[in-house]
Length: 136
Ligand code: CO
Image (tube, rainbow, N blue to C red; front, side, top):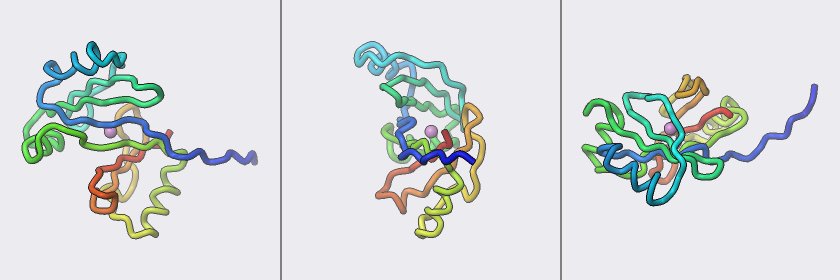
């Protein structure tokens, strides 16, 4: 069996909760100059993807007020919602989180957008940042 060294986690995307995609997309795309990348809707949100090097900025607009993004914007206003790290072995990473006592939102990985396995960690364990892990 070939030994494949595990790479360090990379920032896959930064999710930004917005009130209205159409209002804010021109800033990131046209003023800042980030190229737009088509992405499917996910978790009750319309998503506009923008490439920032090897990472993405994802602008997330709630499709309904009671969706996760809808609640976030209602309670806290628009802003950074989560940071997603791509990891090579999600199960190992979750096992390390568990043994370190990190509170998990997803006890087992689920399928996220683009069919990748993902899991969220609770912000109480991460200095207040909602962290998504995705398997690359
Ligand atoms: Co995400």
